[in-house]
Amino acid sequence: MMIDTENTESTTKNKKIKMHTQSLSKNYGSVTALHPTDINVYDGEILTLLGPSGSGKTTLLQIISGLTSPSSGELFINGEVKTHTPPHLRDIGVVFQNYALFPQMNVYENIAFPLQMRRLTASDIKKKVNNALEMVGLAAHGNRFPHEMSGGQQQRVALARSLVYQPSLLLMDESLSALDRKLRESIQLEIKKIHRDTGTTIIFVTHDQEEALALSDRVCLMNSGRVEQTDTPENIYENPESLFAADFIGISNRLDGIIESDGFLQTAEGKLPVPAGKSGISSGSHAALIIRPEYIRRIDSPGLLSGKVTDIIYAGPESRLIVTLNKGTVLTLRQPAGIPLPQPGEIINLHWEMSDSRLLTH
Image (cartoon, rainbow, N blue to C red; front, side, top):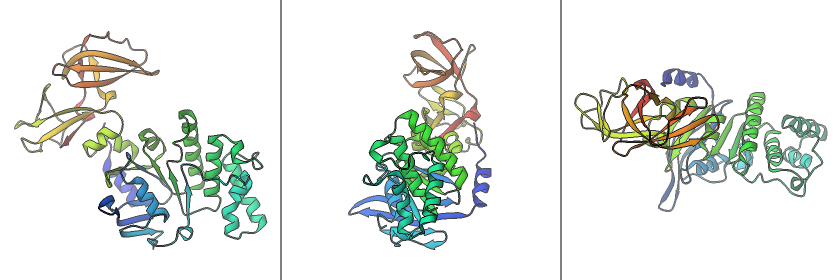
């Protein structure tokens, strides 16, 4: 399914830029952790920096927070240069992976700490802390200590402490990675609700693609110290711009081949049509056809391809069919619950709409 990228671009053009970088880079000796990088973060959005280990996402976050100095480039927050501004003067909140709560302080005192450092009055501190506790659903837990709380509750305290002084920008570094799946999903919903209620601009770092797609207004996918693609979750999933993006985000079926003079893709499994608008790729170019599992259908009549069902994986509301084609290519299909499943070893016909595929050159 194709997403309207022009509409996506026009939407972001009308938004105020909260933070942006210009050719920001970081070298550690001969190793480049972050190549010159330009990104915009818009006011009131959740932008997720997504990528595998070593992709540069944490390095970029550390530079934004002021914990690491860049080797080159500039950082702007609210239009002001903040490249070498000390961390405590950047008006940024940070939620670390380990929460970094003070064990000797109770919940109320932990949340009050940044307000005390800013020398607010006792009455203002009390009001803001109580509001923050209410916001994260811990109004009755102000007297408890971190060691008396679950991981999810500690996460909420860390979030409240980072938001209580209303920072211009909130950074979250792998903040949910220590939580189990159900609790992580619950906290994701809470973060989205708090974001809606406060309008805080958030930069979230994760290696978890599902988390990035669920939380973000936009996703900045990073690879080997470079930005691979920045887009909405829908567009980065449906219209990946590179083979890395297609492979890293979700499950992709990939058929490699060479573009022939008639515009078709010649693969090991046979000649396949390509999506409209891609026929202009020059003959002889190496390319890959990408199809998501949910867009491949089983049909009774001959389809684009056929193959043998080699495995069926039950996953609750759906089953995943693993199909091996004649020349050994393995494809994955998603089939909703309630539809009769084929038998292992059965030969099935496969079809998809060209508009649901993506052609990417190597």
